[in-house]
Length: 334
Image 1: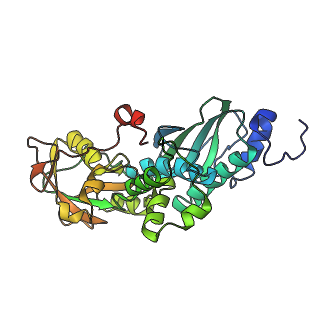
Image 2: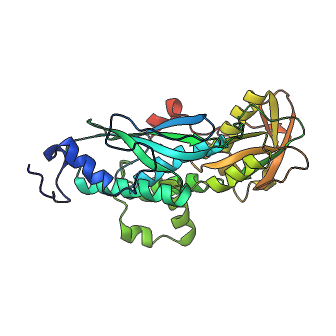
Image 3: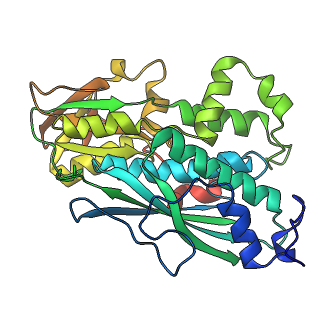
């Protein structure tokens, strides 16, 4: 092809890497780095010399379905889930590095929509953050890998191993909404064989407001990053992103800290089982010491380590633990 502006329905297989890259960079805001996209690597300024780094991969099939997720939603989600992990450490997100492995039949319109979603996630959730580089390659399976970098700005990281006996356990954000959205998809937008069918704009508009909200939280989560950073500044002793379900993530925090997390089910809303066992809400599980300025809602307390990592209403939790890709992906609920 020539360097003329390609049509939106042109596939990436018809384009050069440079043309695809231009289709992405044209949708993104200007770089905030000392050296941004276009060189062999980005160069970032980090105020206190420490960088928080995380990475996450979304694979078509276990992690998303193109029948259900628009390119914009995929870009937004890919950014949001990584930004949340940085904020969970008490760090301010400053850069994303994005790698796309795409079938050669992927359209330029898809690539542009994905870039728009990434840009929107940064603008809405982390205004100091921008996409500063990445990679493009061809694959039979659409795969999105994002690395997020953050600055601690002079603070110590908030780790999941810092919870102490007597701390209060709080949740910042919603619980169970994304899991409800997943239920909507699998109950209403599959064919007789259980295969996904297209989620049209008309079908989404026909949903009642509660289901529409839950669907939005599943397809394009909006983690409360600003509140997480405020929690870190307020003296949180431990914090983590609730990505795989409250029960599983609370177990991880309890194990890392050597404590038991005691949860009050009455603080979990109308569906405690979904709040405990669902995943992908991308809120924050936080422990605060007594007399600290807290955020979110209190759902329990940190206790001396007992027989169980987490207890709900005084008993070990035996319900669904949460999302484990090695256990759950072949069940089709990713």
